[in-house]
Amino acid sequence: MTETKTRGLALHWLMLIGFVVGLGLGLIVNLGVGGDAPWVVWLTSNVTGPIGQIFLRLLFMMVIPLLFSALVIGVAEMGDLASLGRTGLKTLLLTVLISGIAVAIGLGMVNVFQPGRGVDPALAQALLDQGRAGAANIVENAPTSISLGDFFLDLVPSNVFTAAAENAILPVMVFALFFGIGLVMAKSPATDRLQEVIQGLFEVTMKLINLFIKLAPLAIACLMFNLTALFGLELLARLAAFVGVAVGAMAIHMFVVYPLAVWLLGGISPTSFFRGVREPMIVAFSTASSNASLTFSLRAAEEQLRLPRKIARFVLTVGATANQNGTALFEGVTVLFLAQFFNIELTLTQQIVVMLVCILGGVGTAGVPAGSLPVVAMILVMVGVPAEGIGLILGVDRFLDMCRTTLNVTGDLALATIVSRGEKDDAADIAASEAGDLPGAGRRGLVHDIAAG
Image 1 (spheres, rainbow, N blue to C red):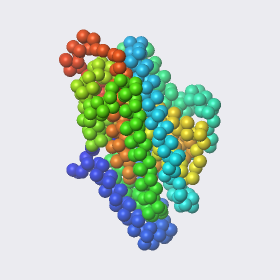
Image 2: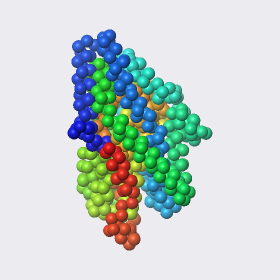
Image 3: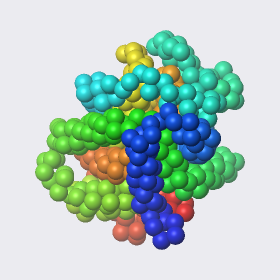
């Protein structure tokens, strides 16, 4: 998330104010008159409830254009697939592997510590009933069950427009991946213009999401009021457990998986690695923006880690979109937490589906304020968890956004370190670097400008 400002205050401060106001007023109502008082029921049903649901539906509305355009552009920007050769293949395989490990750690932590368990089923059902109408068009097509065979069969849509109309997001994402590959393979002036059109769709979608997110402070206040008026202090305990598990899983990935990866696969000391990436890590945590951190990551890769310029710049610019370990981990933890909160048991097959979709879904969320929320909503629908429950985590999302962005940026640098092993710059690459050429950085800068509003 970026440091968007409204009337002199950064957006995240306004969101924090909304969170505190909604939380405080909801607790006062819950402890004072109770959540079942007639005027409280009327207020939450006719005022605060609809306001929060409108905000969520605005985000849900952008799911298809966001993921389609981001995936197509992300693949198309890789350039000539044949010329990328070993570098592109290594980057792709390592991205899938490390992101998969991240999601597995998150899912394992949630299954072990059960942060969403213990909520009164009657209260959870009351929350669902309150928000069901506002998210009816999102959850009505949720599958009642998922088998592994049907999952892979349904990946390939017989009609992509029908899949989009039915909110079958994953087949649309697969279509977008193949469409991006087609753009790379069929290089011509016509396909270049088509790529520019899709780039325009991506930029418009990001601009609209940035516009919608400015409603977040009011929406968070309303959503938190509804939740705390109904759940009271019990909600705070569940949220604290959720944050603890999410941060714990991120810490394991940061301080166990990354050091082992750069040591065993990258041939570099973990101490030297973390010493070299301190600056981009600090920028990532303070800004919660992968795009704002990209320049610092490029400089750290070249000056501190001494990675080959061509390899590092390719991996970091592509990784800023595709290698989102922290985002994928967060999405998996959130989906399982909400499933536990609403007493919905997810089978092993469903959790495998969550892992696969989190890895793929992370590709379309970089550089977008609160961009993971539509992806989380899409995954919730796929596994039959009520999408309206996403309002539970909005109040604590800012801090988790800072943590997962730091994990994302560090993961990009770890990936660049591993891919660079055994590679060297040639004279042309060194000359281009000295001339200030930063491949891929132009669009990232544009994305950051758009996100900053």
